[in-house]
Length: 102
Image 1 (cartoon, rainbow, N blue to C red):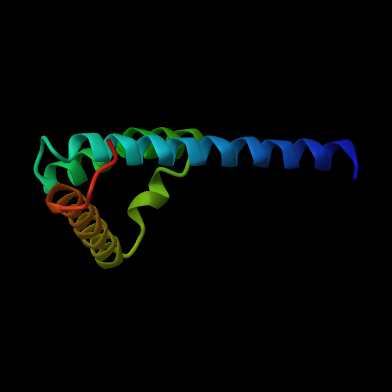
Image 2 (cartoon, rainbow, N blue to C red):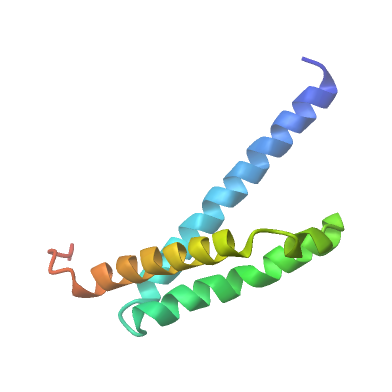
């Protein structure tokens, strides 16, 4: 394996570790917010928190114009499914009568 391939592999590993950490932080934040806020607010907060990342990414890559040349119906469906999934997750955490570790 040449040095360029090793550098690319290492870069991929680092990015994957960062992504897993970000998902773990998001999951922990959702679980902390759920008892205090309605499920739809928690789902909306997650979406609003990711919006700046998407905007910066599109600006850096110079593909901002392509964001608006898509099939809106599929994006709306994806958004609705995502909100329903997160609302269900938050509702389940709130109403779960599971025994909690002490």
